[in-house]
Image 1 (cartoon, rainbow, N blue to C red):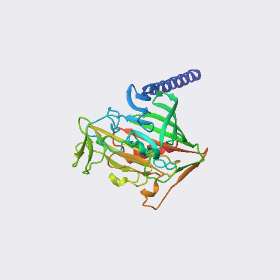
Image 2 (cartoon, rainbow, N blue to C red):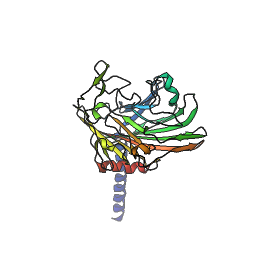
Image 3 (cartoon, rainbow, N blue to C red):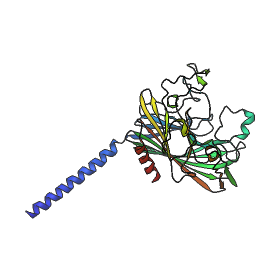
Image 4 (cartoon, rainbow, N blue to C red):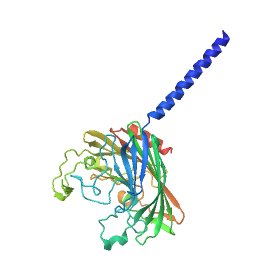
Length: 353
C-alpha cells in the first residue's frame, strides 16, 4: 500500500512538472517574434513584429541625427509625422528637424544639435552640430524582445568629436503593448562638454496630425500635391490628441511641468492609441520637465530647466574629458487609452531596470 502511494506521488509530480514545462514552452512560443533586419545600403534597420513593421532605425545623409521612423501602431497606423520624409496631405510643415523619435540637445558647447536640418542655410551651418551614425554593434532578435546597439558621434561643423554616443534600444511586446527602452551613454571626447540650459531637448517624438491637440491657430499644411498651403482656420476633424501627466495635468497646460511620465492619447482611423514617455529615476534632472506642445512635439527635457520654471531653476550640466552620463527613457505604444495605474506600473518596472 505504501509502495503504491509513493509511486502515485512520483507520477503526480512527474505529470505536474511536465505540465509546467509544457506551459512555459508554449508561453514562450506564443510570444511574437521581433526580428531586426539590417540594410546597410539603405542605412537602416527594420524592426518587425511577426513580419509586420513596427519601426525603423534610420541614419540617412539628409537627417542630422539617427532616428526611429516611422513608428507604427498595432493596427498599422503611422504614429509619427510623415513630413519631411514623405508628403502626406494635412501634415504641418513646421520644424523640419522634428523627425520620428530622437535624442539630442539645443546647446552643446554653444552648438545647436536640436534644430539642425537641411533647411539651415549654408552660411548659418557653423552654429549647428550633427550626430553621425558610426556603427551597428549588436542586433539580437527574439521572442517578445529584441536588442539593437549602436554607436554614434556628436560632431562640430569642423568635424571635431565632442561626444561618443553608445545607445541600446530594447524592443518588447507585452500583450497589446509595444515598448521601446532607450539607454544612451554620452562620453566626453574634449576637455569639457557643456550642456547649457536650453529648452530645446531632449528625448522626443513628433506625432501624426491626428494625435495633435485641436487648435484654431493658423499654420501651414501640405495639400494633396505636397504643396505648402497657408491655413487660417484649422480643420479639427479627426484631431483627437490630449496630454495627461503623472501629476494629473492635462491638455496644453502640461508644457513646462514636471512629472515622471506623460501620456498622449487619441485615435487614428478609428484605432484608439496612447503614447507614453517614461523618465528613469537615475536620469539627471529627474523628474523631467516636459517640452510637450499641442502641435505634436512630445519631448522630455531634464536639462532645460530655466525657461520651464520661469527662471526659478537652472541646470548647466557638463562633462570633463573621459566622463560620461547615461539617459534612459521608455516609450510605450498602446492600442488603448491606458489609465494612471497601468502607466504607474510600467514606470515602476522601468525604474527597477
